Length: 210
Image (cartoon, rainbow, N blue to C red; front, side, top):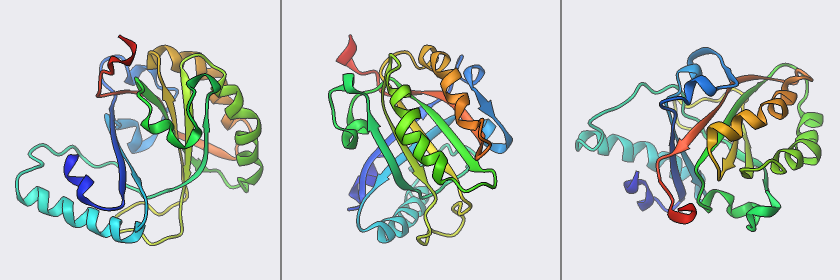
């Protein structure tokens, strides 16, 4: 991952994994994404298009130089735009910096449109759902991404999709269990259907809570 920081548009890179008891704690798991074992998440800024192109080229160079000796099957790669971001009041940081605050793991939600227009659903997320979610112990913040119409490299996903990252600063397994009833409310209107909903742990053991 460090090599990607040479690209001007790479703002941050994080990796989370689902091992041990994590797969059994999933709230939803359908199709190929049910095989998720780890997730790499990059935040990209300007120049976005050039960064996408350079990212693909850098990956090729790293593979040729033996920097990727073990490659897991790629389930999906996509470039989404940030739609919503909120922080829990107790986190004491602004919503814009939540991903940079130390966290123990995340609850990852991947959803697809089910036919109805998502406008009312997105408004409900921002006005009601996320404030309630952020009031739960262990939740530090939430960022939601949606599909973009900007060009992406060949082979990247282009179909509409929503990916939400709920940042957790307490045990991800326990917090996910506590959030389950709230998360399931997202799908009652049938505006979207869940593809994946489950906890992943951070690969960094932060000393902030020792």
